[in-house]
Image (cartoon, rainbow, N blue to C red):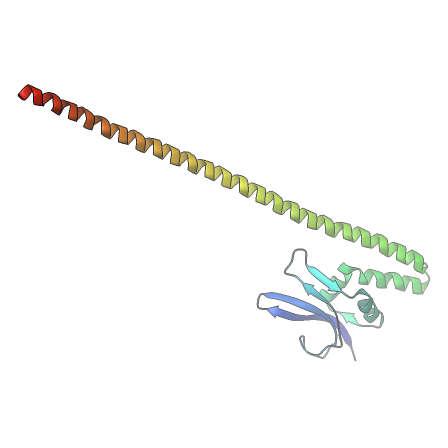
Length: 180
């Protein structure tokens, strides 16, 4: 029975997430599987991968073949690297302690890269929020200035309208005593 490590799709339309499963290669994509070893959510940034490392390594060691996407996920999490190092131990290239040391060095380097990406995304989001706030403050200041200018224009127009009325009333009052 040829066994594959592959993804089984779940979730709603255009918002999918996947289960990482070990299944018979002849079974349908979302059909019967032997064991679920993790999940993959590409909707987050960076993508969320929850993987049972030991089960994945066991299945790979027993001959399960990952699909291209599953291979990329396993490689990202270090399962393929660990398998490679364990095969080196079997061949006698180095001992198990050296393999574990190399794997831990690789793992810390990988975690640093992922953390740098997360920090960069958080910093970028904070910078964008700050720029948006500055743009909004500038627009609000321009609006306040325009409103103040409009109020002063309206006040000047009202004063100009009152001045001719007052002078017209003064002329009428001056004409009345002369007519008597």
